[in-house]
Structures are given as structure tokens and as C-alpha cells.
Image 1 (cartoon, one colour):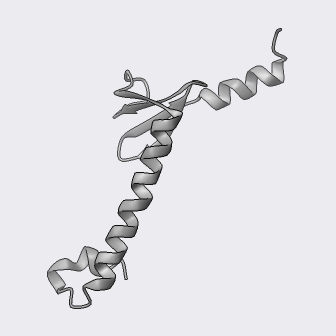
Image 2 (cartoon, rainbow, N blue to C red):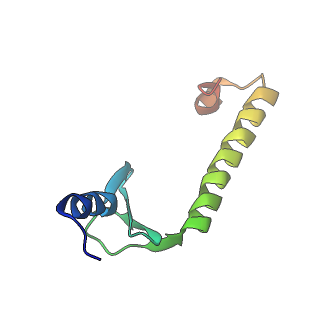
Length: 88
């Protein structure tokens, strides 16, 4: 089975690296999410299977909730904790 020109273009777009910020680049090869740092042309530092990427996303959500709970439970945050104060 061969791909049409449009399907090939869509596949190339799917596999194109994306800059997430802070020098982090990701691309998806259909099997793994490849994460590179500092430049999208660098060799990936890690390949994540879909299940590991899902776990990473759950980790991020869980940690944000924990931080929100911490800020909520600490109403007397001082000026030295301005990064946490900004989350309110």
C-alpha cells in the first residue's frame, strides 16, 4: 500500500519536531515520543512509549494539584515566597 501525496504530507507534519519551551523539543515517530534538548537536530535524550508519556502527563497534573493544595493550605505565605503567592 502506498501513500498519497496528501497522506505523505500529513505524516511528515505528524513527525515534525515541536519546540515546547526551555530548549525542549519533541517529535512523534508513530511509536515513541522522542525528546531532544537545546536543538531539534540533536539526538533524542530519551524515547518515551505512549504509556510512559501518559504517566508523565499524570505526574504533571498530580504535582500541580499538590502544589495548589499546598498554597491553599498556607494562607500566610510571606513576600519571600512570591512565586507561590502568584499561584493564588
